[in-house]
Length: 440
Ligand SMILES: Cc1ncc(COP(=O)(O)O)c(C=O)c1O
Image (tube, rainbow, N blue to C red):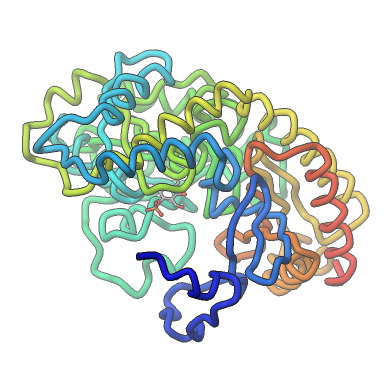
């Protein structure tokens, strides 16, 4: 029976925040009641422009009515339909639909729960399909917090340093980070980074290429600092991996589902991976992830060698199907391109006025500024304190933005793909005020 006298969610007192373990480092203490589009609304009725998108998840905005309706309808019919035991309509429709999102292939999908779990699946499949042991990852990369994915991750010490020993047969090589190239920053289309020579050295110093099962790469580095690669990098990496029979795994957990202005970021460079990892934006917030892999690789994965209780949860699949409908029907991939260009132009204008903005970069609605100390050294000394102050000033003005980067001196902005021109202008005005208030 419903107790109509019970206090509403917004008036009942909440437990103290100390019930939540501090291992969840956090950037706000907001008690949020609900979300609508680009906005979060606290229990006090305060509205915040959420340009974190829950770390790149709510591409369709918070609680999109079509996604919410699909979840509600599914939840009244079946909450759990275990994949080893049965087929369900929402899953079958999604398994049929996902391969069509990426040209080439032919592809088959595998569904799991989190980004890290999908990276684990990609690594297991690569090893099973090639019979080779080693995995090669890039410096500054981020792939998750499970043991295997920590071993792949070098974005920041905190993600791995306290957890040695980590799984072996993982090697790291240089990523072309053009702003931090030795000898000074250079333009992406004039890249002089020696990543290819470093890769060759890796093959000569650490591991034979014919022992490498896969190279894993984020097409645009996320946690490592929103680093966009130079145009020739991914196509050349694809050639090299093919020469050595190495599989290419594109980790599109953060870049996928329209975020960069293409459904998947590899499309910007016309590169076809062998395995693509997806999560975050796939289901608008419900836990779901997966991989797309070439069918011939999937066929080499012996039944029972991978799986899990909750993978491809039926409610999450219903949310994903509705999410894909919304992305298509509302033209969100195109909106990411247009609003992203608007944001980048605004940030470039701010960089002309604030010398602490060392670099402006991004692709689609994955945009960032790198904050530095412009005087002393080579003018690129990371300034994490300033970055933190700007983030706090923005929050005080009701804009939520995240940080990133090895030295935590990158302000990263991840708006939902439904965001409007007026909201982007509002965010830019808040950032302008916040930079000034923080002494940039
Ligand atoms: C590129 C990338 N890969 C993997 C992950 C891990 O995903 P999850 O946090 O869902 O495990 C993330 C999360 O931020 C990510 O950005």
